[in-house]
Length: 217
Image 1 (tube, one colour):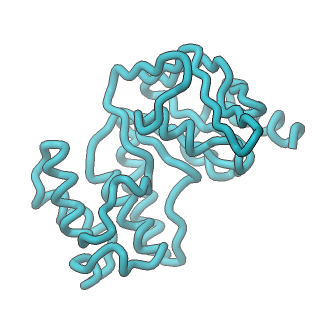
Image 2 (image 1 turned 60 degrees about the vertical axis):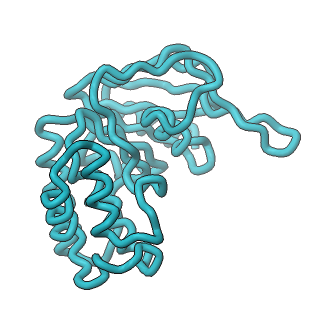
């Protein structure tokens, strides 16, 4: 379980305070994937980073009683001066896994040929997205965190492969996806929430959340 207990978070932008969350209390139960709908610029990434433990709340507590992933594509998971191979092996060692397995899995998922052995700094944005997805799915978590959905590429084979892998993982895991588009959540989430003015409004179904989100747009 992942639980927020009266969590508040805000930032100062010049002379104005931007409220991300204001006394938010909610939980993500294992087996019940959650989608969070929020307009751009409202703090979606900050919320996901708080779930992962990368950002601390100003007030309140965040409790984790299971294995929670780092966010999909988080820059902190990749060293741009190293190759995909080096990144994969380092992450495996960090989590106590077999480096050979993690390297082979990421090489297969990324399918970037010789670039896998080159520095990540030389990759296109699409290649970096592939690597970020591969690194996330190479490890087993109870809750996977995804900011703005799956990596988007024009490669039909990669999109098919990536979707199949995520669906396979979610047979025994849960996902939290934050996005400004309801369509991003439809494949993976039954319950959903809407973020508005620092308040998180929880709904039993995605359809209910969509109605509020579209009405308030």
